Every structure is written in structure tokens, then in C-alpha cells.
Length: 346
Image (cartoon, rainbow, N blue to C red):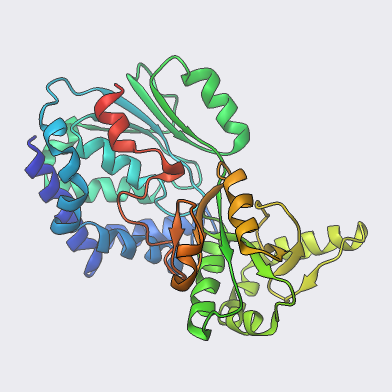
């Protein structure tokens, strides 16, 4: 299959995801929520619409242009295993896209938390071009005889991945999260966008904001008011169970927290948080925040700041409010260039 043929397939897939979805995709959405209650129709559609907007001819061409010559030089496709995560809908799709567009053979181990959506997307891709059947294997079992591995999981599972896949060329990803740095000059619109960065996908994504850096004396009221647009998530059973559980833990351990009803705000220097909990930390000098973020760069996927603050930071991964869940195709997870790996390391 030629490169232009692959690009056309994915751009056509994007057209379908942007329009009225086929019946089998709606069925997959229903099955996905049954399998994983976090995958509400709203959240699945959020993922589908993102990929619909990303998979267009011009966007794909811009992404692939720096790699085009090396892709076309591949004469012996490799078997690339991908262990997909299941924290948010279709989170493994970027790895799938990267492997397939380079012309390698994908062996994808589906997450037990997301085993319906990816197969439905693959079915759609094969209906566009049946030749994809020669390049795609989906499984829920162990990946056998790969030439290279890409695996995404928690800090604990990454040790397992390193043990079993360390002998192959590999990318192994651990837990990461997003943070936001506020200076008190954010507009109401920007605060609402930051709220979406926190609460979209129930905060389960590696790009969701889990911690806020706030100037000393920061007034939390406007922030809370911006958050109110997401108060409906309090009625989701699993989300509410998380709030009740962590609130109980805090009360038993006499740990201070601010109760936002549908979220808990806790002062901490840690970036990682459980669902429904948001950490914050006060600062005096914003340059100290930049230094602190540099020390934590292995924990952070993206940093949200308003446009007027960008020049203050020398850190990578800067994102405008509201854009954490809209990365470009070249915003690679953990800052590791997946395409370069697929073209140069295997």
C-alpha cells in the first residue's frame, strides 16, 4: 500500500467521523459505556470529534512532510506491538495511526477498558480500503514475536513492560498529567477553558489538569464559578463514589481540603491526583514555578498558561487554556517522537 493511499484512507475516515456516524459506531459507543462506565456518550463523542477534525488531508500532510522520504524508503515493514491504554476513549489511536501510516504491521493489544471503539474504527478503516487487513492485528492476548514495542500504562505496569519488552526497541510510557499556572489575570472565558481542561473525560486523561499553581492571595471564587459548568458530573455514580471516598479519607486523617461539592481542592506539592481531587500550590515568584516544573518534567504532559504568560516560561509542553485535549498530531506523548522511533530505531 502506497503512502498516499494510506493518507487517503485516514482522511476519508476523518470525513466519516465528522459527519453522521455509521450505525456500527453508535453500537460500539453503547457497548463501550457498558464495558466502561467512564466512557459516557459525551466523552466518546468528544474523542471521535477530535479525531474527525485531526484526520484531514492537509493536517496529515503537514504532520508527515518531515518524515515522508524516510517512510517511502521502507521496504521491509516490521511487526510493531502496541499495548493500548484505556483511561479515556480511543487513547491508543495515535499509536495505531503512526504505525500504520509508516507502513509497518500493527499488532495492537486492546485494553479491557476500551475493547469496543478501536475495533469499530478499524472496521470502518477496512471498509474504506480492504488492503488494511494485511497490516492490522487486534488482540486481547499477549503480543508474540514483535520487532518493536510501544506500551502505555501506569508507573507500576511500566516496570512489567520494561521487563518483558526491554529486549526489543521500545517506547514505554508512564503516568503523566497536566498542570496549570495562573497569575490572577485570566479572563472569565480563560477560566472556563481551564475548567474544561480539568473536568473533560472526568479528569482521567494524561493531559487533564490535576494541579494548579496560584499566586499568593489568589481569590478562588471566580475559579469556582468557572467550574460550575461541570457540576453535572457529580451525578455520575463512579465519579460521585470517588468524591465520597476521598472526602472520607481526608476527614478520617484530618487532612485539610476545600469542598467544591463536585470536586475537592487540596494544597499539595504533588502533581498526580485521584479522580475528583485537584491539587494546588501557592507561589511568590513565577520563575520559581518554571524551575519547579523543570524538576518535575518527567511527571508532566502539558502546562496550561494564558497567552500573556508564555514568554515567562522556558518549559516545553506549553498549552493555551482549553487546548489540552486538542493536541496536534506532532504533540507526542511524553515528548517522544513516535514517528522518529518507527522510522529510525527499528
